[in-house]
Length: 154
Image (cartoon, rainbow, N blue to C red; front, side):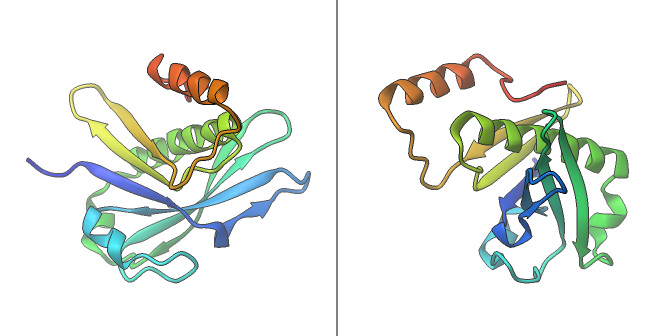
């Protein structure tokens, strides 16, 4: 069974602010788990990768912008459909920004899993050291996560 997971890693070196001072968070998409051990934030990846910026705009909207590609001649870029990539980027931006809005911290890793029968992408949101202020916040976050699909605006 092929591994259909994709890995989006937070890379603060890409963080930016838009013209209104709204935060944008940098993420790097890696196409397989083996490449995780070779990734260093702030450095050019030694493997195929895509850098993106997810912005939390003042009007409440969320955007995902493509910043660049690493190793564009790699096979994965010949076989990964552009439409699938754009859908992934849009949904990952929604997930990352809404997680940030809920807990005030940017997720360190998103693992995207394409669900083959349903044209859906499931995200595993991971924080390396999430520190919630109190037990009530932790309980509220757990309830939101268990309610299913809490991050998608659309």
